Image 1: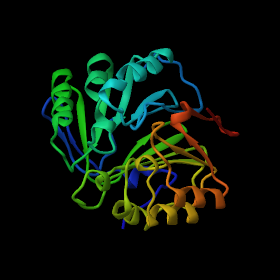
Image 2: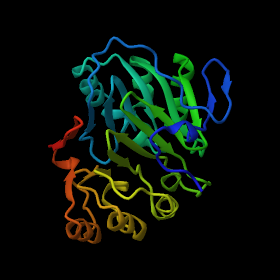
Image 3: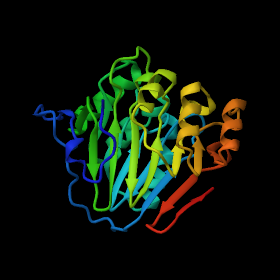
Amino acid sequence: MKLRLLPILTLLTACAVLCGCGADRSPGEAAPSPEPTDAPVTEELTADFLSTGKSDCTILRIDGLTVLIDTADADDYDAIAAVLRGYGVRRIDYIILSHYDRDHIGAAPMLIRDFEVGAVLRTRYIDKGSEYNALVRAEEAAGTQTVIVTEDCSIATENGTILIDPPDRDYGDDNNNTQIVTVAYKGKNLLFLGDAKKARLEEFLLNAQDSYELIKLPHHGDSNKALLSLLRSAPPVWAVEMVSGEEIVEEELLKVLGKQNVTLLCTADGPVRAVWDGEALTVTQ
């Protein structure tokens, strides 16, 4: 059984690392530490859920670090880069890729090309399509460190922690091989479910926390029994669904969200921004 989030995560950090230079890191260590940065450090967490249609990209800024959870499609690069440059970001400390579908990794090669990237954290269960091959070529060309996450792996900041939870086994399809990400910051938890479907969510439910302030829902409006169980047992205040205008959030999911008094925001209606300053979580669209 995997441990869930603890105040100090030294016991949770186990990942196998393959660096661009050919070195490696033994299991049992944390994700590589970020390099010093001249970016302004603010004691708050912000999460920008971009409006990129049927694709996922969230930009986290936490205690001076910039972290991307997924990178949407290749043709979403300009939108992602515009937000980063608008914040004055020149370095992305970590790119966390939940799985290898093109709507989650598509813009990663161009981001690695155009920004300094500290490390890319990705799953060991590989779907070797053209997008994956482009990602590997970009990592090799830039000498970017690649972390193949095989066990719970943490990134600690001054006031919070990002926990990457990989699947315990190969479920045989990309969506169920999603890495699930929990962001804990000053007593609040944000949960990013990638495109996890029933089998992966059933595994996650065994050790899920009791509460989440915000959940990024999986797979663009789809519903399943495990997801509904999670929402009933740990209902968030907010839920974000990454959808295009053509997609429909399934009726059963809407019903459960309504019964649990969860406020749902869909990125088809515009980007969503969450800010947690230690006193309140403010979510706007």
